[in-house]
Image 1: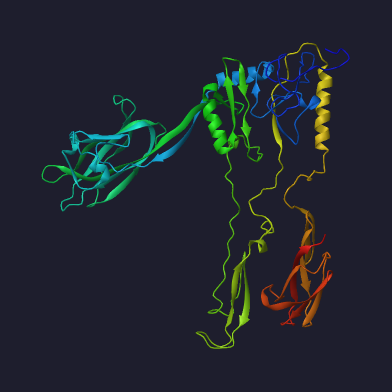
Image 2: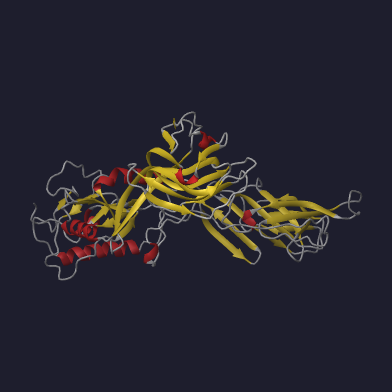
Length: 524
């Protein structure tokens, strides 16, 4: 160790003093300062805060921080001790499960597609109750049950019972749905009494249970009979199979902590969903993995919704346009709808002079968030590296002035907080660099030199000229215009006349109305 240096660094965040890591590849191996806070006098920083960075941490910036998903070991004894204690003392145990529906096959025997059915009468064709190809005699209701056995544990959502469709009504009126994983211990998960059916009626019954089972058995106890026995038309079961599931705990501090045995399933969850808010505790080796996420962060002060997922979406957009051929005095577009109106010379279904026009939809007229230059949903965001503060102490080889360390970290934070200008030099898509709005005049300029602008010209002449707010590089720009009524509706065309790089004239057929105009093109 160089005694002239104030700090000693290690390039391995998991094993103190031992490393084969290349310190230049800091995405895989974050440099860490080895220090303790034994003389800090209360200057220690809190554990498990988060911060997003726009670069890989190096040098003094890396004090006590680890990239999301990193393995945290005895290099950070306080961090490991805290997560381990929270995991062992947590009283709330939860379960994450991913399921997929099982579609019942077309049975050709009592065992088809890994699913086996049977009944109390030992019928070799009990499966016909699933297919529903014909009525099935069940004998006395209080002695009949029907069983379905899946190859693996499933979650049942609902089941279906269809009554017979013959002349005399025969249907069950009371039963229980039992479930088991071994065929010996049965749990009652649904019970019904006083049920009635019409001839051939099919009814669905919802089941509410959070337990997974392999077998389900409908045990009937009473029902409507004819000639001493009952009949069923069909039975169905709506179940989801389990793709994977794991238990985890929620600590009093709000951390979600799973055991290391669940890591492979959490890895799959992260790859599928892009988010896994779980600390993964490896008690045997005294280490844990940090959470990870690709989601955008929506910060909250409500501790009851921490770690909840907010589904993506945009506000709904609604509008209507009345049939202005039938109602010529009610030409009133709203929301994102716009329309043009022309007058007919006569004839047709309606009276001469009835207005006709074209209705069109333009979301950008409702909100400038919608733009022709954007081809995907893109929330305002920046790509950042998410790091976790994982400890106040690191195993050290020499005493260090902790007050200096804290000051160094605070200096880094101040420097980051003072960054006002964002470097967009690596942005691959055009972005807005300048906007202007004053009354009815406006423009917006993009980073590639594209400019959209517009305004309104007062009425009084059949030929009017707009002064461009931003001059274009040439006359190969798009320009459109229309006559606008006092209630901002379009009432006539305004054809484009002579274009220059600084002006554009319009021929106003309805010269008693002002002209609204818009132009698009490159200004550099």
